[in-house]
Length: 377
Image (tube, rainbow, N blue to C red):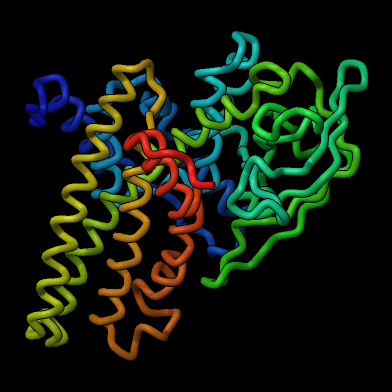
């Protein structure tokens, strides 16, 4: 496989670098991590800049190579991440593009790309744990609406979101994977209560969401009623297959910074640490190649990532934790100081083997769908 840039890709990379060099110095200061209204405005402002420059739809309509060049160059340049817009841009948007009607695509996709609306994800529930199909949030038809009652947890950016990609149970008598429906719920609807959750790292990007007879139009259903599990697998394939691609580049940058810091504070003399950093260097290079392969395979199969995303997600989650454990070695006692570089990221890394499907779930997917092993009893 030839992974070098084509002339077209070289031109795109050069043009993007030039635009980033001109644009990034003029950005406003980033808001405090706890200022989510400010964070929303900042992140959507960046998305609008991308839209105006012609880069907004690179995650959806560009070739796999162009998409990865964009992620690589923006991360290397220190450009803002998608931030509060990540559910809309990387999860809900691609799902609607793949599964929605023409009217739904026309309604929801342009505002996401223009940086006008934020989405959150209402999948996980307090009593379901990692067993997503055990969800209990109930929805029943009442004329042209679904009436929804239940609760969600770990709902990303719910406190600043306009829309929620919501999973509900519409047929409690059906087998549990067959009675689920995927809805787009307006977060301003009556009956919604949002309670932010503070993480170990001190941030509050997640929330509990309580739903008390919330009315959602039937026209907001993506896919057929009771076919939501299949639609959800499309969403999760994007979440596990491509949404972390930019973070691999970020981890490679952090690894270089760790090596430099270790040389400066004398810890580079520890041969065990040098071996660890060298192995992580090889690990993240391999993960980047796997990302390239997954995105190329998705493009060949119609744009939806396959189960290879679970291989990536499983290994990346652990590699990220190992990276920030190595950072703690480099920092020494300073790794306990939340104001030091890498310490908040280390705390955040602990969640990666749980978020977007636990490592145990990824093991099961790989065993059953890639290796063909029988389901556990």
